[in-house]
Image (cartoon, rainbow, N blue to C red; front, side):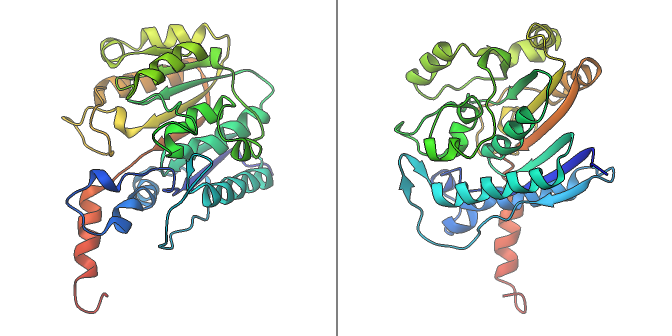
Length: 289
């Protein structure tokens, strides 16, 4: 029988180049792979209503990190993308809950759903950053290119593996507050991507509902980068520029569930700092190392 909902644990970490922002960790290998630990923690913490769980095999071996054609760690990302798509092809789910991993964990499941859903799809990308960086930009992390890849823009080798792309006119950015560079703001405008600032979402979910209804789609994909949340309330991600309140996010999700058929949800960019500190401590204890 075809499974209805797949729980996809996708501990991809290679999309980010984040160790530079963690001065308190001498072991840069440990912090670089923090997204992988974060994905496993999300799987342990998130409610499970009996969905089949698939775990994408991700390379955790230490070694040099290389930039190829403007993308950091392109080779393992390519292998892992192919593995994720093969898993989805084998199961053919109607819905996918993805527990990442860096933001690029959305790329394979969202493009797979776009290819296997006859009806139009809308996409709500909740993120403090627009994730439309391209190869050749100053930052080579694939996680910053994730939305661009979903739209069909980016590295040709990686794009060739993806089964579909999403139209920009059915995408809404929510909570965006850090474009990082002027050319990213210009690129968002050129792509025709609409956005709602966190202040709007904190006030009411209505503008988001109106914008998504206007796409004409009734099936919805949701990408939730934890850096969209206000770190004064909860600090879960690498980034600390988010301004969306927990109460506003809860209201928004409740409203979206009532209005749309949500067939894809990704939770991305968990960076469990205290768990990494505990992991470092445990490695120093007798009989454990």
